[in-house]
Length: 330
Image 1: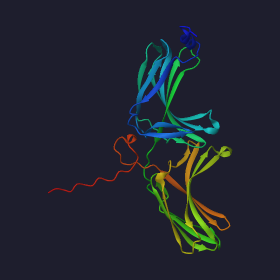
Image 2: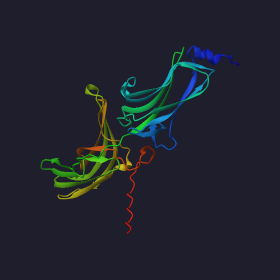
Image 3: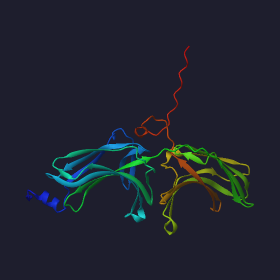
Image 4: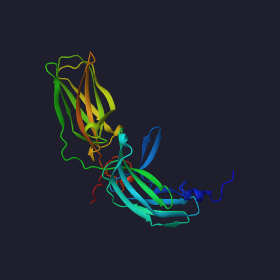
């Protein structure tokens, strides 16, 4: 079936069809480190930025007809928090706008350079069970005589390095059941970076119940909302047995947990009164009647900055061994 020679122009005039296509190209994407984000069965690859990294690139505008009349073209850097139980409302905590072109007429494909220099990206990106914190670039073409604008978004991921805590005391606590069970557990620190190792010991001071085994679990707790709309979601990241069989008085059980193998984020506390994310180490004892006795201890996680030169975003996050000093010559 033949098409009307001016069909695209007529559809565009009445607000149907798309008068142009827009693509956002971030500079340095061929060497920049990326992060794979799973969305259901699909995996999305996003460019990774740190802290106040500059974000530069080009907007490519391709016409679908002979010309495009518009009321202006702009690009925004946005930071948003989206609650999954309230998807219609996005809380914007960052919004920076760059005007790419004033109102006018376009008769050929165009390229527009953009740059966002030293923009604070206060929070890390997060994709949780009930909440998402996202950053994106949004380009908007304000089309004349159209019911809708042309909008294109490009998400990117943000990590923020943190200063090593000045105070990082060990954890030592005694728990138990009166005249039945008395244990003491000790962890070497209370704050750990994301590639750290948790080292601890469990001491049995009094054992008058028949313990079958003991296990340790690392738990992530996501809290969203507040008051009657507070939701807590617990996710067990790992669980493993550290003792099999009945302990005796005076026995000590070592605990060693390498964090590098888990998909962890830093601890988030009350991000814009929208959500928090905390981590706990759960110690569980199971007796011969399958009764469970547990003690939970909160741990603080932080992201360590490794020495990777002036452009950390394009390097892998791993610690390099120190370079040996050359011997002095006479």
